Length: 421
Image 1 (cartoon, one colour):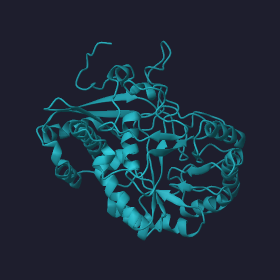
Image 2 (cartoon, helix red, strand yellow; image 1 turned 90 degrees about the vertical axis):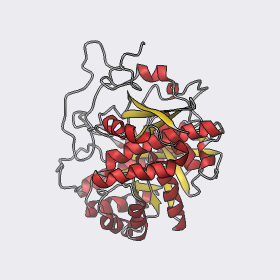
Image 3 (cartoon, rainbow, N blue to C red; image 1 turned 135 degrees about the horizontal axis):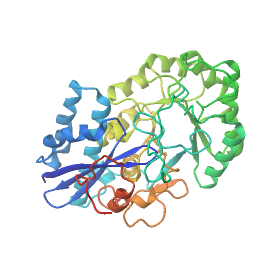
Image 4 (cartoon, helix red, strand yellow; image 1 turned 90 degrees about the horizontal axis):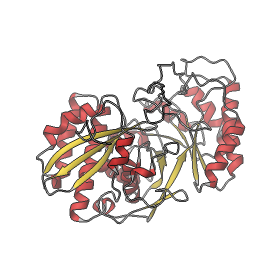
């Protein structure tokens, strides 16, 4: 079962959604999605000569050979590219042998996957480039408006400094209540947001007043949804150890399901120190790629919950990581900022993950998320869950006509730059 052709298309959404398409010699087409990164499609094109003509049924051997490239380059964008390629091949394999992806992973543990809603900072997330620069997508711009906003400085609190103003607890409470009414039973909010205090943008520290203010935002969300809805908080790697401990301790009354990425990801000893000094469950993982890194987070960092990303590490590595974590009785909550193709890859992995908590949904502000699914009947997410499909492959087909409408200018669309509207 030879791979005949490999190509990509990119859509401007909240992030760039990069879709990988493989066409097989038997006529079957498979789709995958790769995590965002600068120069991503160029990296994928570099792999074309190594992929085309290969036997898709030997996917583990093929991916092992391709991952060897990471020895000579940074693992980030290269691994993103490989994850998208791997998912597309799995989709084609499933369609050829009439098996859903979860079945190729050894079977499913659940018929529905719990989805947690990323609520951002109390309002909708705007669109940003692969370099985190705010933009107006071409399909959303008003007549005469530039597609991309000018570069603005970003505070270390991971917020657009041009936004102005601050957020207050009432905004968090209102947003939490609204999303809970939509049926989501797990909500995640950002807490690294503008505050009504003067702060140093670079020292990774919060004053006592800032810690109290951040905790008040989370407490407002907790009071709005009550004990029946789980709550998580994201910090985007912005704090030092002492501030992270103070913040985690201040958030203990919120009974968080987890506190995500309070310190930068590369220092496992640092995040372990935070975890040992709070009852709040700390998690990280979206910036790690190797099983060895995750094992160290468990054994050295003492983490009880991990948050890897399927679109970064790939299908095969995700399944192996889930099994590794299960050996240590550690749970997984899959990070996910992708469109419906990547989300469905996450659904299949989640279905085959015994130690699953939930899979993320980050695209509530993207108006065409559901329209990208060819022949879709209603929303993909219903009452905070996604039904695990029995259809072969990913169980979802990309509507290329809709994808073309929201394509990223300057990027090839599956090799066709002149496609008719």
